[in-house]
Amino acid sequence: MNAAVTRLSRRTHYGWVIVWLAFVVILVIAGVRAAPGVLIVPLEDEFHWSRATISLAVGINLLLYGAIGPFAAAIMDRFGVRRVMCVAVAAIALAVAVSPLMHNVWELIALWGVINGLCCGAIGPYLAAYLSARWFVARQGLVVGILTAATAAGQLVFLPVLADIVTLAGWRTMSLVLAAAVLGLLPLLALAMRDRPEDVGLGAYGDPRGPQPVAPPSGNPVAIAFRALGEGARRRDFWLISGGYFVCGASTNGLIGTHLIPACVDHGLSEVAGAGLLAAAGVFSFIGGTLSGWLSDRWDNRYLLFWYYGLRGLSLMYLPFAFGMSFYGLALFSIFYGLDWIASVPPTVRLLSRTVGAQRTGIMVAWISVIHQVGGASAAYLGGLLRIEYGSYLQAFMLSGLLCVVAAFMVLFIGAGRRRREPEGVAAPAQ
Image 1: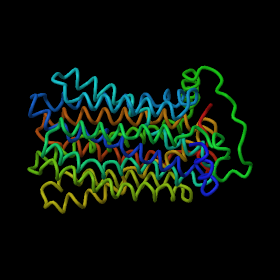
Image 2: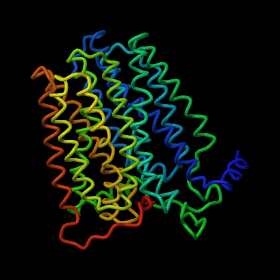
Image 3: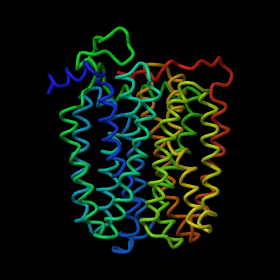
């Protein structure tokens, strides 16, 4: 296998192989993370669990998905990317495969809340910055955009299929099919994933110096993660960026990713139709995320975020009224919202790189991803509570839209009072 890798590296930089391998892994894991949106109604019907109870498991999943990130990055530094990703994928496949045996709420929370939350988080949102920093000097914004877009592509590929399987064969069959798809990632990772470009005799893409000596990790990785957080927390810009990312999580994974399909069912649409809307959003978010990565290398990232958050807020406030229109009203929402869904990630990474410095970017992306998922977990749970209290999702959608508008103006103050300079690229994570 090493000889084949060497031959391939002579034709194309192996960093691009890593990008597309990571793309496939993130895409499939996105299918796992999107599955709870398809499961809510079947579990509610079969076990008579309340929507708030099921949303609690989703909220725990989202919280742990973000919380494990800084420590997963530190563990990758110590044990290697390939090992950590293989262990995480195997655990996810096992948790999804045994899901058909569950009959109690605690089992739902353990499998879909805790295990899948932690293991999906080990292949979480920090990974795009982590891998791009190790393998690329040039084109980092583009790489972050591509890998971030993989999450949207996962919705496109998996949500309609999973919804069809649930409709035709039930949620248990859907779980087994999904587990098989995840298990298929293991041989790909074992054979093709590498930790660093030096492992295949290369330097980072765009680095004229060629392969560089790699210093072994020093110090306690967990302590390094907390020390990086302490240093970042002393900067005002860190909290402005984090506040925007909190709203980003609340307005995407937490609310739309979890509750759009149940909201469609509330308005007389089928689960398949709701999954189709999310899949359509995935198509356009793939386009929007990749384009945003390209733009983030060229434009002021504060203004990009201002437009992204502001337009997302308007689309969320439009959504409750779209249910009263024809299906085309919802299709318009999917297009407009989809283009904006993950577009905020590349400019956020670029702004954070300038704020915390080159050597802390990777680990700090993991930390703000924790805050992102806290927002997502809060919205997932509160969305279910508001649905029970008021009988609709109107209040949840409107509140989320208003928060996005607030975030749009808040990010304009990033870097205020100091000389601004855009970095040349996303820097390497802390070692």
